[in-house]
Image 1 (tube, rainbow, N blue to C red):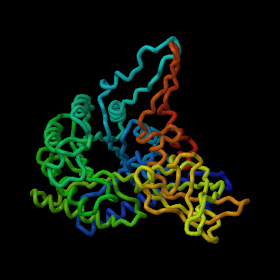
Image 2 (cartoon, rainbow, N blue to C red; image 1 turned 45 degrees about the vertical axis):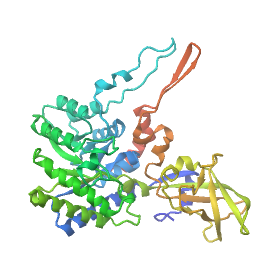
Image 3 (cartoon, rainbow, N blue to C red; image 1 turned 90 degrees about the horizontal axis):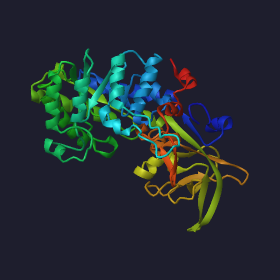
Length: 472
């Protein structure tokens, strides 16, 4: 059962395998997160605000993105694709009042991308066409159109370009630190982060931004790490260092007002003490403010960028088991394999890559005796099995249907990352560019273009029917 419906109700209506997305559950979890943050602020007397930015790279589907925004989450982008989604919703007036967006990720100046404009074709056949994905230019275009956007500067090269092209009316900017599992400044210098600036670079840049006539520094981004892989105290130690740096930088850039700890929060349904984490973070910031000589009026807005927390539980997959095979015995018990009409490599890739487990439940025959069973995908790959070797549990316990019956399995909480990591339908992780294919044969050649931004809009549900249903 799921919210008053049998899983098989959807199978009877739409067939299976089938992915079910619950927009209402997205709103519910987003509201819950806001309530938890408010409870933590009240308990610690933290009088500054706390904000939630949905990290759309976790799942860019309209059925998750728009409900999250409707429930009060703000926008966070990592590529030009998810920024185009926000532009579409904004132009259709579907975003809530006071909605804002921050833009993380690499934002190379457009001039650096000029080499990606196609040159002469290899032959007289049709020329190769590659759309230019200009993230920085799109940010500037949308700023000039009036959409409230704040780029989070990731490199010194980005900073120079945005300062040169800042609109006359000015713009707010953020600065990202190269951060992670750190406790002191020297740890940051040896981080293998890739993203962000060193503490010294960030301080110099914030000073420049503060004195620039058209830029106003607002946010310091310092993601400590994933909460589900780190003890709370370790996260708090990193957050304390971020707060120390924030107050140091606020002396050179007084307009700073937000400390962003990024994502990494586990879903609310998991056994994790979110309230303890938030209370500990707020207390650590207050202590660092007092140590630096700032009062409660100077406390920063605290921002989080949850992805899995909002998206993961919103989606479940209904999988038909086509056949039950017996292959030998162990201790007198049969070794059972359920041949499933799906590929676990494609549908639950987090389990294979990261050892992330998912609830696997029988959708029918739940009153029958269950047996140890592995599920096999329809491919013949050794890794196309559930549970995979990366998961701690050795098998599932599932009922066995009669020869003329079909068992259905529900794989729950698969809403975050699964589709994008496998590139389902041509939508890759963070909507990164899919390479075009050139097929050559001697002197002849032809091209199969990669998916365009317009193609991806439809694949991720930005259609008239979906948006019309979700509109408030």
